[in-house]
Length: 248
Length: 121
Image (cartoon, rainbow over all chains, first blue to last red; front, top):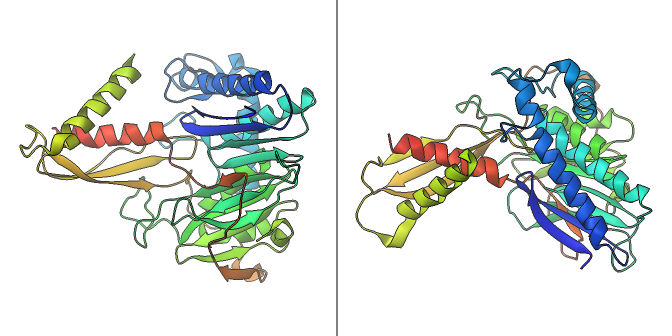
């Protein structure tokens, strides 16, 4: 079996590797995701991020992995004009918006270092693939409808690019903001971003979604990124070169 | 350990609330609508609202938002380029993987627990 799905970091993670004897490689990828969860989970009081937030670890004693993620978060905050921000209103920091993409990218690098050319890693709907699928054809990825789970509304061949979707949950015509439940958050149901790798796609999908209807225009202005944004009425807006990834 | 206890309590509460078509209302659980706290997850915050009637959960709805911290708009509206638009349509055909925003089970369970605690007060 060269394909496995497990629940890690509170989400389904699917790893597919197209070559013989992939069992150990798949174990190595899941082992990596477990490590990430132990270091970055806000649900574990003994995780590095929890101990950092509670003042048990000084900034100077942080691991290289934590520094890497926090530096990337700060870079994204600046590039997104503050729309992406790991600072929590309650104090401390919450880098989880960027950890997923970072963890997938590192998992892909782990496979590449071991000479794996054909794989697909899907962590909670954010996907890095490379090479070809089990039929020897380019990987085909679907974009899920934000309104009906299980319905595919676009089919893409990312050709090695990363694909990430950020979205909210639609309830009637309203999207709710937990920080201000009485306020309508946005007219956008979801935005899917294609980037040079999954980390780029993920961090800019998160930032663009926070911008509401302006998100797709923000991505249009970023070189090497494309987006498909869906509003609550089911109308989609796409960046100018998105079409080159589309099969149907 | 705290996590295990929470999970046990969560399923215990759900079983008590949904269980066996029981006609008797659960003692100490108020009818009404209760919002759990928002829990941070790898997808962004997750918040669940539950409705309780006759001592049972009759509805659970996710009220969720992404990592949304700022609301001010920086982008210059006048410089917006024309971008292609279309109405989304269901596509058929095989795909290897699906990209979409998904609820994280852990944050969802935590928020439901929180709402149940409020109902039990």
